[in-house]
Image (cartoon, rainbow, N blue to C red):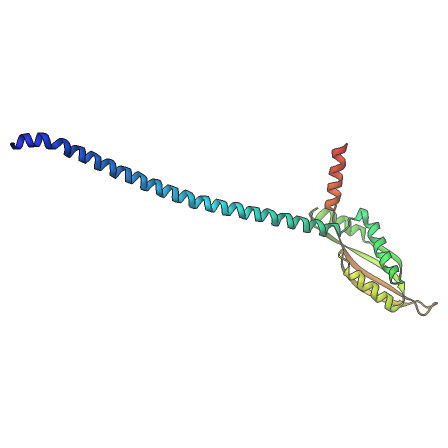
Length: 197
C-alpha cells in the first residue's frame, strides 16, 4: 500500500480519535465545573441553614426579651393609675404599723417629663411623702419602700419627734419613682376592646 492510500484510510480514524478526545476533554471540563458549582452551592446552602438557625435563635431571644420587658413594665405604673401605687405604698406602711399621712407627686415635673421622654421608656418623677410611726417601724417601711421596683430612690429623709405623743416619729421624705406612659397590658387591653367594637 502506498503512502497516498494509507493517508486516505488513516485520516478518518485519526479524525474520529481526535473528536472523541476533544469530547472527553470537554465533558471532563464541564463535569469539573459542575462539581465546583455543586460544592460552592452546598457551602452556601450550609451557611444559609446556619443563618436560618441563628435567626430562629434570635427570634427566641427576642421573644424572651419582650416577655422580660412586659414583666418589668407591668411592675411600673402610669400616673393615671398612681392612685393604686399610693394605695400599695400605704398598705405596705400600715403592714409595719406606720400611717401614711401624705404622699404627692411633683406634677409639673411629670408633665415636662411626659412631653420630653420616649413613650416606650420609663421616666422618673419626684415625690414627697410623710409617714408616722415608731423608729423601728419607720425604718422597716423605708427599707421596704426602697426595695419596691417602681421606686428609684428615697432621699432627704427628715425625722421629727411628734411632741404631744413623745414616742411617735414623723418621717418626711423625698424620692423618685419610675413611671411608664402605658404598660404593655394597657395597650393590649385597648387593642382587644377595639376589636370587639
